[in-house]
Amino acid sequence: GNSVTQMEGPVTLSEEAFLTINCTYTATGYPSLFWYVQYPGEGLQLLLKATKADDKGSNKGFEATYRKETTSFHLEKGSVQVSDSAVYFCALRAGANNLFFGTGTRLTVIP
Amino acid sequence: DTEVTQTPKHLVMGMTNKKSLKCEQHMGHRAMYWYKQKAKKPPELMFVYSYEKLSINESVPSRFSPECPNSSLLNLHLHALQPEDSALYLCASSQDFGRASSYEQYFGPGTRLTVT
Image 1 (tube, rainbow over the protein chains, first blue to last red):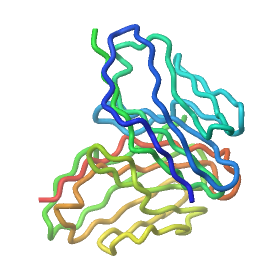
Image 2: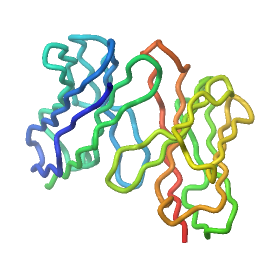
Image 3: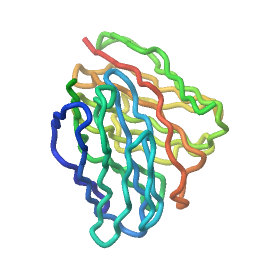
């Protein structure tokens, strides 16, 4: 079946620290992989995506590389800001258009 | 315009009330979705409409009744809800629904529902 395992939070970092949020997946077929971000009190925003192995998605300084050999899609950012504080969801889509979400990782960045 | 709008933003209703949540998109998307998100949990899929027809119903209780009057609008009619139905209800849309896996979903801001 399809599932996403995501690093448990919460994660607290100082401003300008390096961020990694781990995400691994199990899927049938060839999934597309996504990172969504949810700011407090808001809906989900697509942060980045990758549709095939070795693709790198990037946006707003965040990056994630689709690694088929390790079934992973880890989110990274070189220097986080207070405004990056949010909940981050890893998700996959395989076959039809259903999204399977991880449990979410809450990131808090302190000045 | 890559926006999905949802109204109302907040809703408080009693267990005997009937209310509706509304969702609208003008991106020409042919697939629309309802998700339910409890606090500190990921969104859970409830319904999928494709070309205005219900494609997926994830065993949702009948007190939730979806409706897709046209390709831009999606409603969720609520009746006789329970306090445990309190959650953030998210609408999403995508270009299409099916085996082509490149269609990303765009989410609205959600309606925060409280059932008293």
